[in-house]
Each structure stands twice: as structure tokens, then as C-alpha cells.
Length: 153
Image (cartoon, rainbow, N blue to C red; front, side):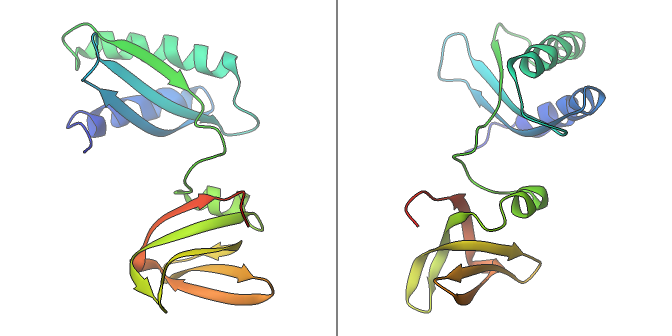
């Protein structure tokens, strides 16, 4: 379950990232740790995301968080790159990873399967399109719960 502060934190972090040429791709607030840990994942919009990007974002976001006092108690801020072994969510990711092997999971069986593997062709409003050994497959988007890069295809 997502922490209730996450939407506010993303709203606060997004313009900070934009000003630095970065993009916020996710945030998690681990309140079960002492002190709690706020992790914000970023991506460089023009190239590889490096340590310098994480440091710049951390400093700038820390200033904003301190100024707004959204998190009143002590916490640890971690800014990192999500890496490539993860789920695809944005239109940009679906374009960037066209042709890559992916695994698609569905909420209910579609044509007898809940898990599909193949080369990513594209995603649009109606479906996720895969190439399975030369055979095109269309999975209805409303059934798709996850698309992630796959090293087993």
C-alpha cells in the first residue's frame, strides 16, 4: 500500500527534478524503519543517470522538503536511479524498450494465460503488443497489471 504522503511528495519533487533536467519515476516512504526512509527514484532525461544527478536532486529536494515541513519528524532521504531491471510504466519507457524481451502479467487469464513473454512491439490505449517468435500477440490493456523487462525470453 502506498503511503498517503507519496502523491504530495511526488508533486513537490517533480518541479525540482524538472529544473535539474531530471524526471521523478517513483517514490516510496518506508515508515517501518527508524528513522523512516523516503526513497525517490529519478532518471536523467538526456542520458545515463549518474551519482552526480542523485546528489544534485538530493540537495535540491532536501531544501524543498525542509521548507515545506511535509514530513515533520526525522527521516532519511535516499535519491537513486531505478535501474533497468524493473517494470515499464511510462510511454517513454515503452518507446525506449521497443524490441526488448518483456514479461506481461494479466489480472485474469487471457487466452488461457496470465503471463506472457516476448519482444515488446508497443503499447497504446487498447493493448500491449508483443512478438512471440514471429507471431504478433495483442494483450488487452485493461487486463495488464505489469510489464517488466525479462532476461528469460
